[in-house]
Image 1 (cartoon, each protein chain N blue to C red):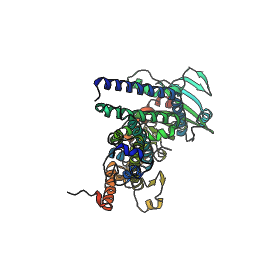
Image 2 (image 1 turned 90 degrees about the vertical axis):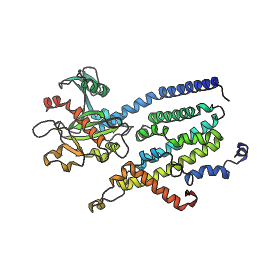
Image 3 (image 1 turned 90 degrees about the horizontal axis):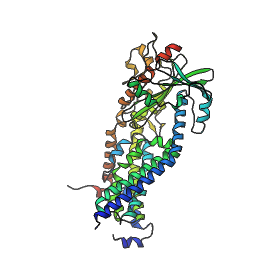
Length: 246
Length: 218
């Protein structure tokens, strides 16, 4: 038989050993993990502008294509500008902005900052906006690239932490994301419409609204709706900037 | 079977081979013991996640079976379940961290599944039923056998769900566009969880009708 003392001793030693093992592993692996996350972010920003990058060339391609990183205030005024690797204005990179914190401040009506990336692709200038929202099981995020009229969508990427595989998780597939190319986030009257994700397909919409909608994922309605909410919530903050610079 | 006999067995004696092969068929964890159904529903909409899940479960089950088997004489019976859980959770977290640091793309594919391994009842079931009373080598074989038994069912279910539900296999389109032009449609029901149960049910049906020993009398 095992005494109570033995049981306590056994569990105490086990817990301490496991804790030491896991925290050591976490500490040692942290730098490599952070680097992967940064590369992932660069890849996702580039992918929204339809530039395919691999983990190996993402840093170089990012430097080449993303020429400006701009930080805006809610009125659409530029407060920081980081261009070709140097600060022209202010001292914060859009790349380092924690979108989650900014969205939280926005919700509480505090002053917040908006990151914006400018991509030079050939003769074209694209504006890339990072997105963040709530999915069914966890966060969803992405990037949307707009042409220089701030209306036509060049491309999008979406990612998610834990949406249901085969259903909501389909938002990170090319098939879903392809639908957004060529859609418009403003209507002809210049009003902000965002892009709706329509359950049952955009064929249900009247002709003039089809350009502002995409098909939802069957079986993934809640995740599809959260993508639409995310687009609306994030993009609407930039409307003052869009109107000023159009 | 007494453990004294086991030590004299060669590494791949008949008894040891059975540990490996029985869980594939007539003692399959999913179709016979009906364990691990929850993850069988969750990850079988596509073959790729099912495949990766099967690989991860093979690794975790084999290693945790060996660890528990090595510790088996020191574990106080009253807290054995907690000890088993700690071993599984530690392994899973370690695997997750290492994947995130060195093979980030794979870890993205796995996302939630790595965490799901902890809740897979096959793993705790094997630790409790086998590894606690058997030597490490036997425990290792039992772990591999059961994990493969689990994995092949997962992949078969995922094959039918992906083929009929999305028209693809391992992400590649196999049903030609022209079928769709003639009005063929992907079966949306296949990608929803209930169809996983029905497919598993069909596999159980086929298995029992082929192997009369498995039919319960009452």
